[in-house]
Amino acid sequence: MADFLLLNGPNLNLLGSREPDVYGATRLDDIEANCIDVARALGHSLDCFQSNAEHELIDRVQQAAQDGVAFIIFNPGAFTHTSIAIRDAFLAVAIPFIEIHLSNTFAREEFRHNSYFSDIAESCLFGFGAYGYELALQAASEYAERSIANAEEE
Ligand code: DQA
Image (cartoon, rainbow, N blue to C red; front, top):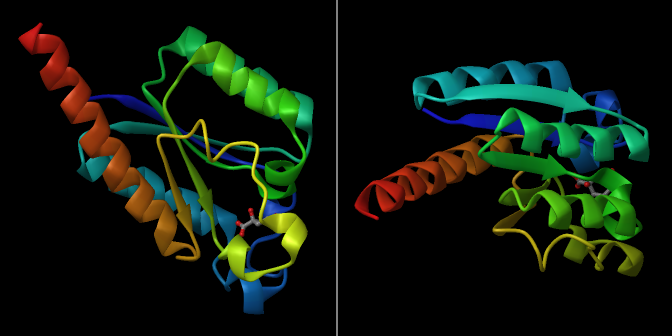
């Protein structure tokens, strides 16, 4: 049993109505509810947090370290392409994380091709829409179970 955190950045509160041709028709509430169910079925707990504010995302990452969160699933939204400050927060807490995007950012405008997170993430998921969050949770669960098994061996 591990504690996971699902973090979503700016404008992802508008999922469902925001550019549905790019991001799909599923609302963030529904993604979060489904993820909580999936995490529970895998034997883990999940907290969800969304913010449009860079400092709130940084505060939540710092708090995750104090709470003993084992793994973070993070869609930084447009902060993907701009935020050295959030990158530094992840480096500071050293909590493993998956970077996730609903769309395949590499198939879009060139300014979306750069990410401040991909090189420090455990792994990255692009372009699976809302289903990507489920995939990320399964991967997080695998990762946590491997870490627990490794710790027991030591
Ligand atoms: C996004 C991709 C970003 O480029 C964009 O700014 C978003 C959403 C995605 O999930 O596809 O807000 O992170």
